[in-house]
Length: 190
Image (cartoon, helix red, strand yellow):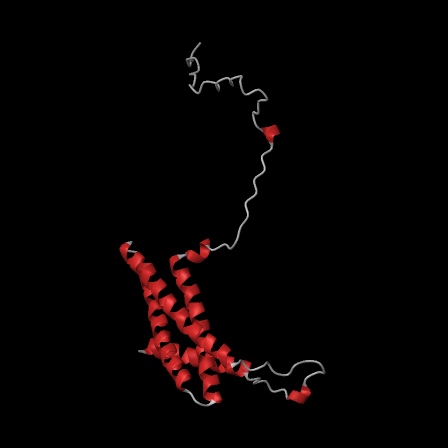
């Protein structure tokens, strides 16, 4: 129970921080901004809010399925460290999913713009939390070590260093014998 309340408290703190950032929660007044500098960010449109809200819920659902699959694989391999870590992440994702679904219902049923803005902001924060949990789940299985991004391999062969033959019809001689030779016996006396 304390883990769930801790997660909800974390979501509330993140929501308050994000709400302050999106509503211009700084101490500066609009008239205090230098000339030519926008003082506030434009509020998201209703369509953007709906897209953000649905994206957060979708991200959580996909993440829960992916972590469940990784957890089953860890159980089959009897890797108790990965099982414990992934189980914890799945518990956090499920708790945040319940919150996201509740907030989505509140968002959809909200009639005033202020409530819709608040619910959309909280859902945006939950979407970010799902992204963090995804990264943490990858660390559980060590997958983040292998995610190197796009790579390009370029190979150069210096033919001057190879036993390169111009005429391939002439067979190359066999390498020297690998059979060791024993040194002659020596006695301690002459």
